[in-house]
Length: 311
Image (tube, rainbow, N blue to C red):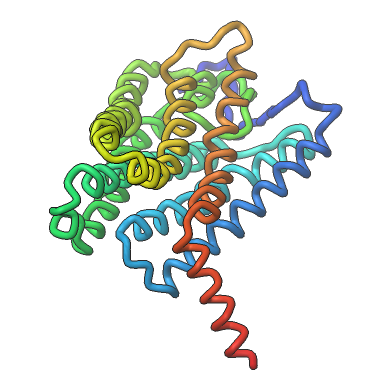
């Protein structure tokens, strides 16, 4: 319980990028444009994969990654735009914790999906003869459903403890969304247990999947080196898109949650957070659509069908 001289905090106040006050309108317009591209690009990928039968299992994983990207950015970017435009944002403590709950839940799913996609690439390149038996439709559903269920169980176990925290200190959060560190900083309760729970969950959802992805790509590169130059170039091209997203996503998360920041850590973490909350979902549809001939061909078929239907 809060002491007599402390008032229980019921609302938090976000102060986003205070050092960009002179460029708020420009920053707002750029982020709004990026947000629209994320929505349109990912919805287009979801629609194409749903309406046109793309046979490769990778497209099934890509569809769910796009769904997560849409939900993930919708949870973060509108609040970020409000903070940039008005200089600050307000949210109840319960709303802040729920905001973190949704953010972490979707981030964990994205991490697991990237790992599953790396496994798909590993089997396709390192064990192509058994690909059709290892990566079946049933296996794809199992891997995707497991990603959602495990993420739900892990974040729910942490949220149970976070909801029991008392907030009697300041309600000022120097960030643009409710992350675990800002929430614990304004809490007046003992957060030792939550810190350890968060460490274990981060290991299971970030570091361990990242190690699996790295291991998969080491095996992939070893096999690529054994191929002829023509086949090597084509094979590497199919993996480079996913590898770029993996490096951006896991690299940023590691920089935020594992590597200590300097004196200006708050500003550093805010800009690093922009990479995995905005930039990665922005790049995903661009890379996977523009560099994928089958998706481009599927888009042409969908447009042709729509034109014929109108005529």
